[in-house]
Image (cartoon, rainbow, N blue to C red; front, side):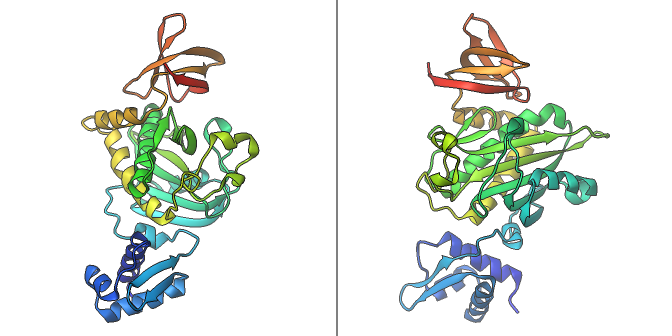
Length: 335
């Protein structure tokens, strides 16, 4: 019987080398497997739905993987401190954020760092009650559950860290350049490719749970989006990348683990803020922003330590706007 370690070490190696066939003896040596163990692991992968080409000269190459993310494959050898210690994958749910809140009842000992992935959300939601819908198996749709010292005050900081994690994860496995549109959009060429939704609920005690939902468009073609929003959205496929969602999900988990924990550490938070600011496509632009039913227009001149947006308004006043209570309703070119 093939061990899970052999099975997923091989599946991930084949995913990473998908464009370059590898001789079986080289692959076995790289994975510290005997030829017999490699053959058994290949048989086990076939039973899971993996299709591996075996060329007599070039070697082994992954042709097809199961359409759904596999829980054990995502969790294999992640080497994380908190986020991703527990991984769950499901086919369909109303909202991964709702599932994460349900899991919060298990308490931090069992659920702190839990990340849930779904292939389809029937009523997935985005910021300000917007809906986030995507065809099955086309996106990264996940929510993570984290206990934070003061989530109500740290929601914007966690939004920044999660957006940075998503942008860096995409760049890790693609050749794309990825930016952040304040406060929660992941963008490619100024078109939205993903988003972050941080939810906080009152809870007793020093630390309380926070749920961070993330959506990333991966394999959709333009026709998957409603006509009205097509000029403003994109996917990794539309940007020219044939992305492996499993490799992207694993990169995302690792980045989230490092960056979310760093954002809550006073000694490391400034570095996270600087890296996010370097990607912020809103800096320097003239925008119109709404807060408390009032509209303001001005040039973005800075992001503060709490991820607030600092505008020089048209009247000359310098004013700060909080990420959790404000939203951009219009954006122009850089000044």
